[in-house]
Length: 379
Image 1 (cartoon, helix red, strand yellow):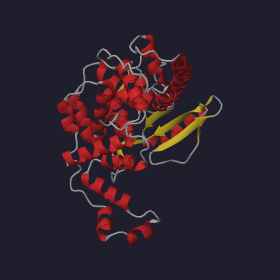
Image 2: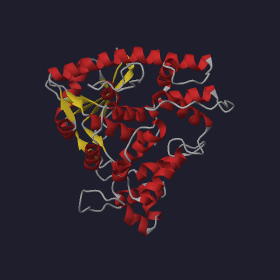
Image 3: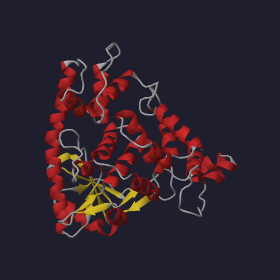
Image 4: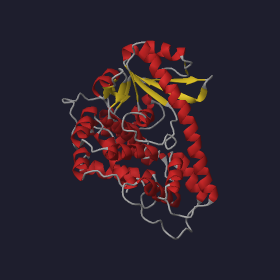
């Protein structure tokens, strides 16, 4: 168990039962009659943290949650749902205006993350209030980056920080100051990789997107699944709404599992996809064939370490060490994982001083090494 391990606090266990009852494909099981461990305030706070409070409201409305919840708890979830509904209507209108402006400037762009999951032909979230769009995220070609920034300025979005890796952040102080927009021209892959960008904007748009009849780019179903998996895994299974994205993408229509495995291998994100699929199956009962998990799974040693570190990061009072270890273990290449772990183990008082005090073995392990083949191992 990596999402709700045995040492997880009661609030996490209760919330997991509510989410499962609301979203599972199978008929929800009855919740325990013993409510002595139920702390409404703690469960509600965690529901907001994980982005699933509106789902609890819908679960109560459609009768899938049978527990006699306090009126204050139900009211808070209902209020969260209607806030989502109002904000998402505004956000989607803003997003449409941005896409139209980019299209008019002949700039190829594709929404990603929650924006992509909320749209598209499959309508994973038919109710627009069920999933909060906290930000807008776009993928463009690197060659279009500067022109895209000009277009965004024309619709009221201003840069708020310098470029970070392959990303720029924007905000519209006039229309909606609480709605950030991230412009990307590449996507990060596995943690610890010597190549910080696994997929360029051109590759993303040309290989991982469809094109509508009007010429707009739209992320493919497999792409939505991989993006949600990376987000969930690198947050060490926090923000359960990403796991719900995975669940809905998989259960909408029959899945091409071979394509998913091939994409994860090509993108070098097998471990994040594996961990997130396991988490979705645990939390929501998502139907995932065991053979798919076997093909995506790292080797037995790293798999056990990954499960253990992810579970430890969910425990009550757990520090950041378990989460850091989990993120290191999500790397695709075992050499890169070991090198990142050695670097993380070095003293933290300056790079020169750190490596001066580290053992020769750690220094050698932390240094770059030319990899003969780009194909990841299965260690």
